[in-house]
Length: 435
Ligand SMILES: [Fe+2]
Image (tube, rainbow, N blue to C red; front, side, top):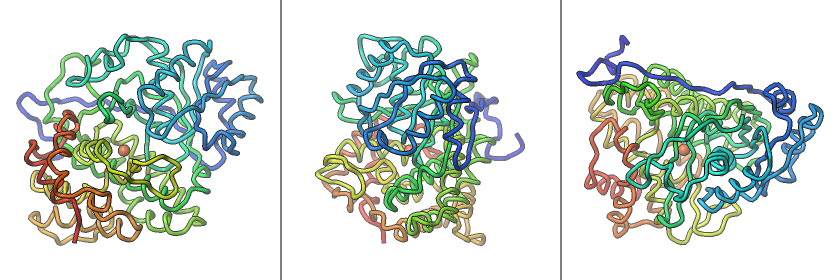
């Protein structure tokens, strides 16, 4: 490719793959669920949702649409926010016993990730839950075969899980979340109906919006795909393949959207234009990072959620300790981009300007500051925590946080700058609060 960032390396990849589900986007499109499910050959579906959405009009719309199309459904709603291995095994039994020929999921990332992985564990059980996870925590066993057709319907504007081949699962024995990835986990179809966000409180729009922001900026600043080693077997090319021309395209537009609309969407629940745009931005960011991978902000977020102290967040009915995913990601992001900018300063400046920094005259040596400054500005204007100090962490937590996060091997390797344990400690120390 012509861009200097993707210039060929001696042993580097010279090919990238783009994988996407069939997407339908727009207000009211949940009512298309039945016709679309029937067209895929579904006659009896497992309908995944959570306890908050079980009595919602969104679920009713999907159920009625399925009924009209002659598709029967059985609901599974025993899904906690940030599903753990026990949740997945339970949902896997539901799949194994239900004689289903398709899956529909309606919810945020937790619901969609449960739907993806319950099919894996229900259809292809293993003795050790970690077998399907990558080393060093798992055995790296490939997904053995096809899963059921899956139609994913997101109800928040952040996760992008409807467009990705990954799921994030909490492993209780390890007391942390890890990513499970396989091309076979990708939903076949997504129905993205922005009206699902109409009733969300502003702080949920904020935490999911910063997740989308971070997906987009991480894939734009990730290590170039040409710097990952070339893979001879095309079926072994990972989704986490580094920045590439496709992820650039979708991430740039997602950054423009989130930079323009996040403050409006958070601060005014009646601003449907802003909230619709954020939903589209989340879809674009999902299509981007689903084909590039994220890097340090997501990698380091898992340290934060493993070691969080007694803490709750307004708007989420979850027992302490709980920090929403988007907040755990963005809290360290300014310190991270101050660190990574020197490895790819032009990329960082371009990302910041897409996000609305208006720093067209900034020099390369200012790139980290420009990115960090714009993210901090958006965080302040949406009442986000000002660093991990506001999440209850202090100097004494820096080493344990780094020891936890360093296990996120592949995300760390997708950073544009080589990053070791000491670097991660320095980043956490710099992320306690921002001026
Ligand atoms: Fe995320």
